[in-house]
Length: 175
Image 1 (cartoon, rainbow, N blue to C red):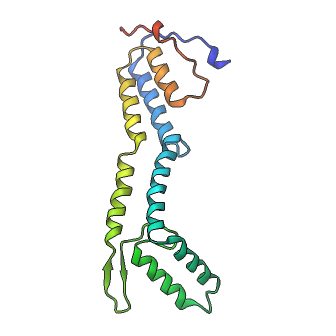
Image 2 (image 1 turned 90 degrees about the horizontal axis):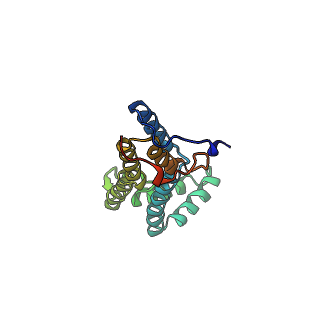
């Protein structure tokens, strides 16, 4: 099996090899199906779901769906429910809208809660746990001097059973 192939864990790790391994880590973290992306999406979903519940989004959505089904006879009802979405800062899909709504006199009104909601969502995006971990792993990869060290770092990211476990005590941490 591939995982049983021997690796010279005390061999020198070249700069080019480090670059290639760092690229693999970058690609793994940018993979939309990665665990870290899912964690970030779950946190984002929790914040949105909490806000949706606080503004009775399911009720609004139900009214919207009912109106769309009867579009020809209830166009005015659709317009009213869209205004209700705008007043709470959401679009009909439950996503954050532009943050203002226009009344029947053409005046714009700002939804204050939307600014706070957008800040929370941006904070999750910027401070995602995966970015911090990725930066730590890449930093540690750049500090590695042997193939064995790099092997363990890459195995931590990929964790797929193909890259064998390394006996940490057998790795020489000297160049």
